[in-house]
Amino acid sequence: MKAVIIAAGKGKRLMPITSSRPKPMIPLAGKPLLEHTILGLKAAGISEILLIVGYKKGIIRDYFEDGKENFNLRIEYITQDEQLGTAHAFGFAKNFANNEPVLFMYGDLLVEPKVYQEIVQKFNENKVEGIILLMEVKNPEEFGIISLNPNGFVEKIIEKPTPEMNLGNLANAGVFIFESKIFKAIEKTEKSIRGEFEFTDSMEILINQFKGNIAGYTIKDYFWSDIGLPWQFLDANSYLLDKIEKKIIGKIEENVQISGNVYIGEGTTVRSGSYIQGPCYIGNNNLIGPNSFIRPYTFIANDCHIGMSEIKNSIILSNTAIPHFNYVGDSIICENVNLGAGTKVANLRLDEKSVKVSIKGQLVDSRRRKLGTVIGPNVKTGINVSIMTGKIISENSRIGAHTIVSEDIPPNTLYYHDPNKGIIKKSL
Image (cartoon, rainbow, N blue to C red; front, side):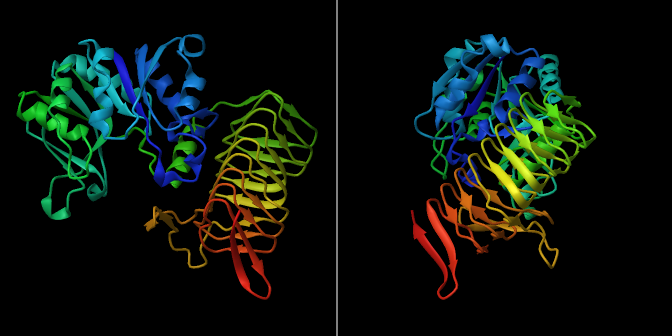
């Protein structure tokens, strides 16, 4: 069996994290999201993969190449120049499929690897035209909901139904296997009211016009996340860190305390007085300490400097410096960021209510009691900056000394507090 993964989108809801890389290439626990997926597919016996690329496609191609040397796989690429929908993207795979069954999936998913093995097995056993992965959700109005008939075959597909429709709580989990007949359905798919060619519409055509049976396969106890919002990366990172094994390759000085499962990569030095609580992943060529406090569920990529500071449940990407008396909790800090001495991130509201975040101009409830900041690439802060809960600082911005960040900061902005004039914002 072959696999096709859509990895073409820009990931606008994840800006500024995706300002410098495609969403599937955001690192989690030492590897890009897409690599975790590809390794899971390989474990399920899939050896040929087609990546549908688009936004910043060169980063994906340069990392995976043809798949042979580093992954012992065959990886091919097709570019989706216009983002015209999921059916449009999957339609590129017709020649690649060559009349064989294909596993289709979205590149922004993190799924427990055993799921791939099970859905392949179920497809082979059921002898149907297709199978769709489903999961039970508590908030069906936020998902595409699938209704099954008494025989377990897909009957209806409704995007974000109202509670009054009473269609159940089985959500489309974004992993499918289909025989080649799906490409005939894709060819007949018309644009939806959103102006896109929707893969769910193709599935309905397969059912209604071609009399195809699509079986539903529900997962209950496995990890699944569609990672469409920044804090979902923290959840996915935590899931992956729970599975790491303790391995220390770098140099550990005297008077360093390490507890739990901690990975410390080649060329990393942990200086005296530091305390690291696992699970944590610390990559290559980092300088940690002296007197750093690295708390559980922290991932530090490569070439970072974490000094006399505290990091907790956060993702710190490469070439970032958090060197002097800083606190970062429940946050995502992108590459090439420098936090000035005394910069602190607030991750808990005084009223202890859940933190809300502005996503594409709309305030979204994270449903998290603790959530810090998202800081984009190439940001610098001055000394004693305070960043309030749920605030986003976009790429290439500068925050002046002694400033409280109580609103989102656009890209390429100088933002500082003037004692006489209040907050000043200037384009860089």
